[in-house]
Image (cartoon, rainbow, N blue to C red; front, side, top):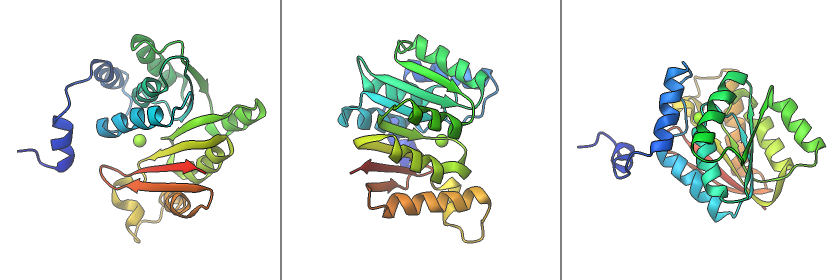
Length: 210
Ligand code: MG
């Protein structure tokens, strides 16, 4: 018997060859195993498709797992810009997207995400979907940028908003936990957004820019 509802749901789906390669690539590169959960990866693809998004922005590429999920949803003619702090991570992610047939669709930009976001604004870039999955201490700033760079109706998704329970524990008050609380409160209360937060796994925030 599965040990959790999450495990049960996951067991319903067959292994995904492209995403399996991502997990292997992450392991062999010594990267942390912190990709988005497969069930949320499926949701990422679905929301991208349902929103009809053609231009996606990802903050935090890691090994390419979420990049493939978004690229699948963007479909033909879609464009994904992926921001990654580390050159070596971006290279691993790029290889996986190439193998999965999305080499044409993705562009990696390396460096501090806040600088890259400023640059995107200066270029007049706008997005239909923004996925935030990077350093937790900057989540509130990333959310502001996501709203700023959003086309009307754009979808903004944030991963790990529960921080393994720390976000709701009043005893935990590191700068990143405080930042995540602020992010969740803004997701829930910002009049520019409609939103929900899924509490399974490590929490997934989903907002739509009005
Ligand atoms: Mg994550």
